[in-house]
Image 1 (tube, rainbow, N blue to C red):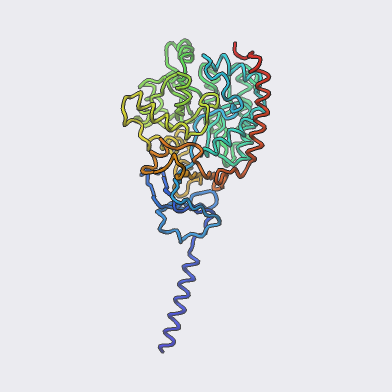
Image 2 (cartoon, rainbow, N blue to C red; image 1 turned 60 degrees about the vertical axis):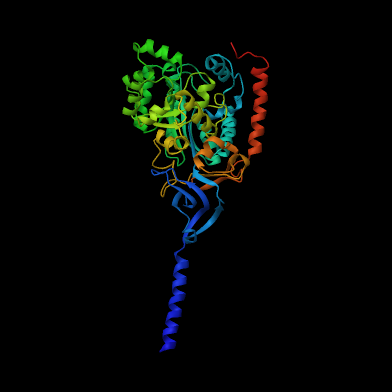
Length: 468
């Protein structure tokens, strides 16, 4: 009897071990031993946490005590590094990387230099080359999603697809002749074709991008608004950015601000993402909130151009959807969102004369879940939560500039460089590991950009003919 009982117990123990082994959850990627900044509603931080990924979504985010309950195809031992949502750049012009460092301090630069430069050199080839270079820069700086406005956006889309990033890509519409359209009507047609081609892409959201209210007619802006509702796509625009814009719109509308004007013509909608929003009043902010408009806050570009500082703290206080952007590489000049952190935190303190203004956690929020809200994508990206898309970065905390880390938010905002990003994951796929690009040839991309720079140098820099 005793032998039978012992045998039964032994079989039960074997069965229990087998069941435990079988119970291990199979996942595609496991990141463990991490300082996890979830950026969820509670801003939960796990000091020795883990993130499990299955296919292209986050399967679990925990304190790490259950690490043995997962069996992973690939494992990243973060060894204390910061693991956080991928950064989201809410506004840029990625292809302009090939023009970076030209005429940086020219007054009225957009009209005196950039528009003439683009009329000479923008082409499908230029857009592709510049986008490839910018994609690498952003991905290496931890940007997993970006919102872009430029020409030939179908070419940008091809580069995004190749590298594996996520993007909202807006085809520019403007009233004067440009590289891919003779007028605004042609620009709209180009945008519609682009939208129809990419509407169902899993990582690319096509969009309309009217350049600004003052560079388009009321009729064009209204038509784009209606088309955006028809196709259910975003509209990205430069808004409340400059004195020139203020003057043109005031003359057109009988003294209204650009935001008031956009509201009056029916162009303020939840589809709209307005870049800059420097010259906005309290009543303008109320309109942005009322119409659920997204805002791209581009600190470095705005202060470099001496246009002013957007009242981001007031917008945050009023619950406006606001996220960080870099603007284009001729404006900021870097397009990695990490490079914005320090300036956003410090300049708002200076402007408000309040050392407590714009604390680090708020800056990181604007770069992640806040930026996702600005793009109306908060249900799928922007935080590390079960069921969301697996866009994740790992930030090295062993570099001299990051040692020691007492507060991970402060370390990221005041100490981190873009080069501290160690691994970048988009849609569950590792696109950069140990600073090495895995999906594109970085050296070849850099060389092609350098070759194009020789063309720029010969056609506009040496002759000096672009500045009028």
